[in-house]
Length: 288
Image 1 (cartoon, rainbow, N blue to C red):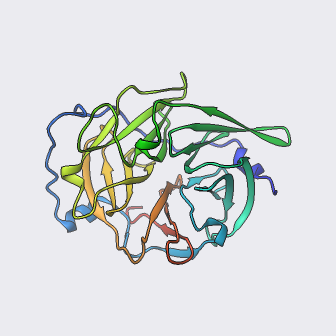
Image 2 (image 1 turned 45 degrees about the vertical axis):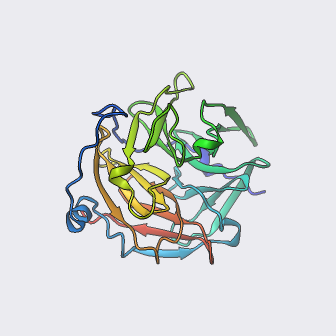
């Protein structure tokens, strides 16, 4: 297989900011008083009018994650095997691939400095590093399990941690919330309780809000949470407070599973292909 040398090139990563939530996970909800127009204004992207839409190769029909590489290309995984794919962001073409684990249900990938981290739906994490001409994937178990269905992964640089969103069971005996845990990259341990929660009374509609991807916007430190059941994006402030929820047009987002920001604020979202090819959408920020 073609090696992804660019995946491991030194680079500066996104200078995002994220801090502990302003309320306890079990605290009463705070209402979000946004009309649709006000909600859209809080998200400086024309989410119904992407700058570009490209179809992805058949091998990526079940693409499940996105991250931006040192060279500006994208990396993704798909949820059947441990293969890293490098993509040209302009065309969506696969320009390289590298197997790091033969089988696995992979739902997240994130670059941290020179390393890549991949995540399985049971919460297991893999730190992927180049060792000469080969790569090494070191597995780290967490306290999450398949019932939690870990699907979102983001790097919180100031706190040197990975954020992990659970699509299903929030754990810790919590009720109707969606939970986001933190994996400390210094101690290699998972936080015992969620560091952020989303009250489902605020984010569910006729369709449940089920996190499928996470990304931190570099200019503001806001945490964007993508949902693939109710097709929507929720935005949390750096303090973890729900700021807004914006619905996405289902024609453009049949099954959104991947999301990443470039350092200049460009937003990328990928869809699995339930009825056709997977797609990659690019959104240029409207506030620059």
